[in-house]
Length: 158
Image (cartoon, rainbow, N blue to C red):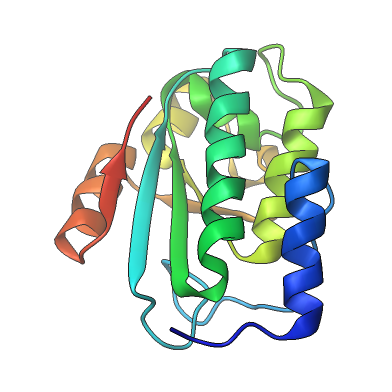
């Protein structure tokens, strides 16, 4: 297991206490799937295909808990498609609480990847400009999940 530095440990403790609202980290993407320089022992992709407040809250809480528990030793992707893509919208067309968008942004700052389905975007008439800056656009959300599973990611759906 990779050691966690003191600053990172404090961050993880704060994220746990604050629900992951304002986590920050210097990690930058090194390839298209995740932000880690070396493969982590754990990889998980969350399916996010609903815009329901409780559904999104549960996913983001679970993602934060996985980061808190595994630190730098986990790669997390949240695959957003269908109504779930509104989580990644600059101006959601569904009622997405600002708090949830802030949590997603904070988790991304820690290194969690958020993938947006281009097929869903096309059906909504959206372009990349409709999305938050940290969203990584993939052609097909379900195919993205399949390919991540082929790379060893565990798949989780609510």
